[in-house]
Structure formats: structure tokens, C-alpha cells
Image 1 (cartoon, rainbow, N blue to C red):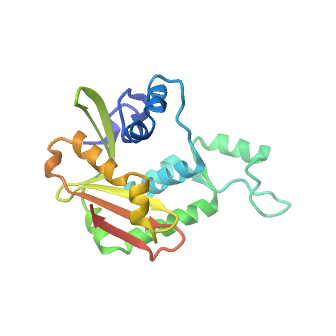
Image 2 (cartoon, helix red, strand yellow):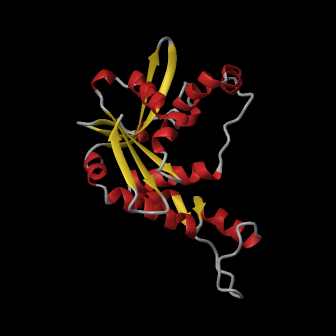
Image 3 (tube, helix red, strand yellow):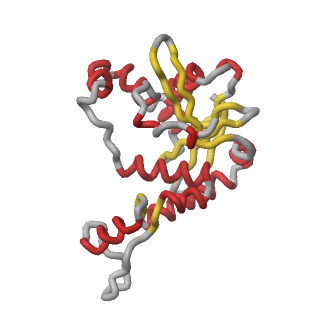
Length: 214
């Protein structure tokens, strides 16, 4: 299983975990998204989350292929031009990549360090496939999942980035992480034999890292 061997995830007309969570709460909203009346938003937090997954799970080389960090320097101030300036826009367009600020990149490095310092997390990520895509028909519906990490022995590993890990268990219920895992298990072949583990990292303190089965 390798994500690179599949069509782009968002280009395939299949139910994903994001769709399933919307369907549970708002069936009409889900239907409108399915027929193209409502577009998926792409918020700054989503960009940062995707960048964290790339850096932590796929490595620095892959990250550098997909993201540019920083910006052009204003010679008068010695600082990076503001993101709303023409100079910055021209620089960003020339990169041909998604752009992150230096502050955002520093945050990603702290997350990465937090994962690297957690013994269980490193055991989980020592072997496996990152960002693997599985497509299957489940109850007569075409479904697809993109697994953050599939460990050959421990099964599905899900990476979450949170602002605060103090109430992570409550957040897991609030954002439907357990339901997400159930959806993954339903779509993944031989799902009943796969274990599920959530790895959560806190950006502001690289010592705060949690990992455990659900």
C-alpha cells in the first residue's frame, strides 16, 4: 500500500472519514457536499496539520519537496516582507510549493521533537507505510481512507496535532477520533485484526507527547 500509487485523494468520489463525520451530525449538509454544492474549506490550521504529518511521518526530504519556509527579506528592515505584500506574493509564487512562515516551521520542529522523544511513538513509527490510501466498498458505498501510518504489527497509527493535551480524551470524543478509527477499521481489509493507536503531540512544548491504544 502506497499513497503515491493512487489518484489524488480528494479527486476520488468516495466517502472519507470527514464525510462520514458530517453525515452523522448533518445529513443534509453531507448530501450537499457530496453533490458539489458546498466546497471543502481549507483553513490555515489544515495546512499546518498536513505539514506536520509530512515532516513527522514522511521525513525532511519529502517536506522540503512540498513546502517552502520563510520569505524574501526586506533590505530596509532586515526582516521578511509581510505575507500580504507584493514582494512576498511574487516570492511565494516562484517557489512552486506551499509556503510556511518561520514561526510555523519552528512549531513543526517542536512537534517533531516531541514525537522523537517518545519511546512508544518511535517504536510505532520504526516500520510501516506513511499516508497509505485504501479504497473499498463498504455496505454498498464506495469509501476511501488515508491512514497516517500503518505499522505491520501494531496496525493503524493516527497522528493528531492539538493546541493542548490536557483534555485530549474529551477532545477525542468531541472530534470523533474513535468513530474515525471505527471507519478506518471498516474500510481496511482484515480490519478486525488491526490494532489502533493514537499519537498526539503538543506544538508549544516538545516534552508533551502522548501515545496509546484505543
